[in-house]
Amino acid sequence: MKYKTFKFLIKEEILRYLIRDEIKLLSEALPLKTAKKLNKIQRSSLVQTQIDKIFSYLKKHPNYIDESKRGERLYFKFEKGEGSKEISSTQKEIEQVIKSKGYEIKDYKQGIAIDPHKREMKLGKVLNKEKPELLQKFNTDKTREAVKDTDLMIVISRAPYDLGGMSTDRGWTSCMNLEGGEYKKYLNQDIKQGTLIAYLTSSDDKNLNRPKGRILIKPFINAKDPKDIVYIPEKRVYGTIPKSFKDFIENLFEGLYPETGHFTIAKNLYVDGNIDMDFEERTITNKLIKGFPLSKEELYIEGDLDLRGTKITSLPEGLKVGGNLDLIGTKITSLPKGLEVGGWLDLVGTPITSLPEGLKVGGNIFLDNTPITSLPEDLKFRGHLFLRDTKITSLPEGLKFRGHLFLRNTPITSLPEGLKVGGWLDLRDTPITSLPKGLEVGGNLDLRDTKITSLPEGLKVGGDIHKDF
Image (cartoon, rainbow, N blue to C red; front, top):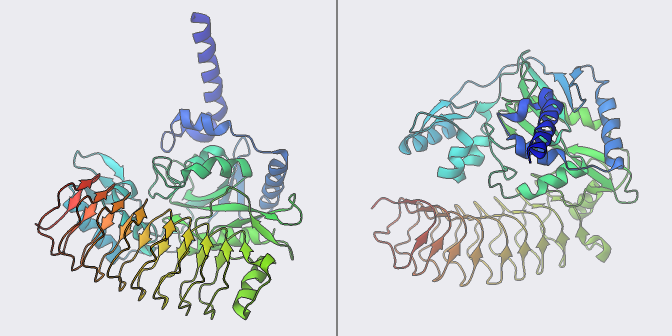
């Protein structure tokens, strides 16, 4: 027994030695146990060879400084500039909410708060608990952009533990947070398939204990040659990221793009935000813009379909999109029957008034600021439903919500009996006067600025109830 214990301690010390210089046991982001688990995930020789080639290419960039001892990280200079010093309306709103909950903000730009017991906490984590609808506004607040001076650098990493810490115990959070993130299950595949991550941090923070923000770079596979892989940065960034950081990363990888080829996101990977393709993948969108019909073989799009700002007014029946479908800013007034979207569906700001029968959505549905008045009874989706500032007046019977339901500032006057919401239910600024019997809410229930004066029998709320009465 003593021999086994001694043997275990030796293995533990060897592991600590192997990763100590790279991650300092990740005391700021990941516990050692988690880092060990992620380190065991194996990449194929094909993926590893591709990453090696990319790193060799990146080292030729004039801004390249150095690499870590094990070659898992590359360090780059970040050019001088000036960050924002204004106090945004988002910051004022967050400060008010945080104060009402007994917290105070120590450093808004760095995302640090002080809890009622005088302990430092990540502001993003506090918002995710107390007011999740403010989290996205916080993450994208332009005034949080880091001051771009010579004391900052960019770190591009292929290390499993850097991917694992992308949104855990940072100054921001996302659906990839290891402590309850909606899409954290995709992390192992990100590591296995070779997703890269780029951080912006201080020049003295080589171990990434205090990064200011990050962006992921995802592998795309050639449909005709699975050995042909290209890496493309996501559109969404997190943290205090200035635009020039994102531009730098995009320009850095653009030199690796092929002239032609049909590339789709590697299987089993989640894409956080749309990715515009500059080669063959983009021809799918071009055909959609020019008009239909498409052949049946083209009705299935494996990746994202980004139609933002185009002149498209309709989509063909039977269309299936494996990733996200983005229609923001279009003039589309209706969707085809039987539409299936594997990711999220974004219709914010469109003139659409209803959704079709048989609609299936694998992620969130964004309908904020649309004239929509009703939802189909057979609607199926797996994420959150955003109906803020719409004309919606009622919800169909039997509709189930796994995520949050946002109905703020709508004319809705009643909810169906037996309604079950897995996450938050936001009814703020609505004329609703009562809640149905048997209502179940897994998260917080927000009833502020409504005419509700009492709660129904059998009400179940997993979080807090925010009310004025």
